[in-house]
Amino acid sequence: MAGVLRYLGTIQGKIEDVIPLTSRFTRGEHVMEFELPDLQGRLISSKRLFKLKNKQKLLLLFLSTTCDSCRILLNSIAELTSSAQDQAVPIVLICIGQLGDVMQMVSKYSTQLEGTHILVDQGGFVARRYGIRGVPFGMVLNKFGQVMQQSIGPTSDWLQNTLGGTDNERVEKTG
Image (cartoon, rainbow, N blue to C red; front, side, top):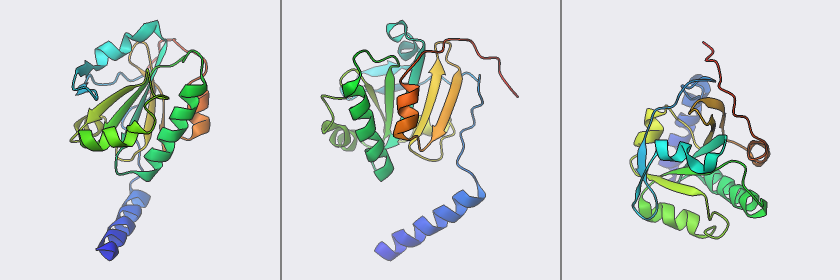
């Protein structure tokens, strides 16, 4: 079994070399609306998320319960949010996986992630609609719902810079 998984990982790596892992969004493009349950089962719409606390930006992070890099990134998020007095940018974690697995993944950080919106994408439907083919994936949206920046495999430095300042300008779509 381990040999098969190693082989599949090798094949995936070769495919990713040929087909780069990119999102289909360009700077200034509006994202599609979605509705996902949070950890308590309440449906949260993307429209509601854009109205959070009159903030200028929103950070969407796509994670998977089966991704080791996502767990490391989750630890970085917990450290950054616990040290921030007033979070300049609301964070929305869209976790791909079953509810129980998502709850287990984030339970270690429940205190630090207080105020972070954690949504469950059980079938990965929203991630697929967004064209995300690799996780972790981060996307910064302005208050108009336009993509400001995105990162495949965001680092803690990228997160720290993103969670800093504000940028509320409307972006003219390029392309």
